[in-house]
Image 1 (cartoon, one colour):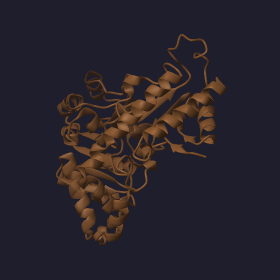
Image 2 (spheres, one colour):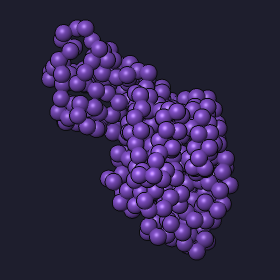
Image 3 (spheres, one colour):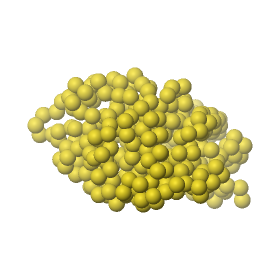
Image 4 (cartoon, one colour):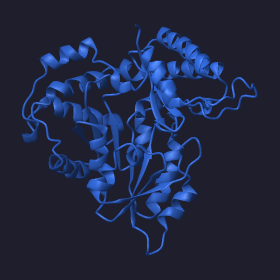
Length: 357
């Protein structure tokens, strides 16, 4: 049976050049600061974000947690949007391990914090947690891959700076956002004190993320990483894949193809059933869909479909997607899915929808 895996861009496999780089990597004990390949990756990652220093971590979740632990103290408040990954998709780890209170803010369908709303949240009375960190996400996963522009980020940072509160950027897919806007990723991270990006998503690396910021911030982050058990030994074997990805401009530029495939997928879904995808949100490589409510005036299209059951039916036919919650699901395009795969998946989806509607 043909399989098209649209669950996430984390399912991408290392490219042949990465496997060769792993075999040839110069290594040492990174906990002693002796792995030259890790050091090279950290310098590259920091440079890509326009920051002074970088730190290699096993995952984006750990990198974000480290950032929170460095920026805050137990009892502090952390402001983010209501669907932020750090709030909804970390199994509660941020609050458990950092001892902070997350103060989620309502946003529109594009998932963007409003500067005026942020200022109100930062200017609370004595009975509320003291907000010491703002976290933004670019691109925004649960909003459907929406982007923040440089101006969007600057406006948020200006409000935060007024209250001497740092901004951390969860840039797991920042390169997808950058290519979608035709800008350098540095521009999107410029106004943030710290930034995290993943190597293991669209860049096809098997594991790892980079946390970048000032040298003082990264010195503290290195200490916290060790505290969390994130110190690695001969990690150059996996860091070599990140070096391969970041040194090749075609790797980051090629993410534009993934974004285009998502648009192809979204428009195809909209043809199958009008309104299940908010096409305005499909700005990068993520497509969120919702079968519970549509804008279709066609009575045949207006019948509600159980998203979880649909995802299970599609899986049985080789089309792998994710059920998020309620009648909302997600698909993500990536290097290992072709346009032909997208068209094939749309054909299977149309067939399954016709059966269950």
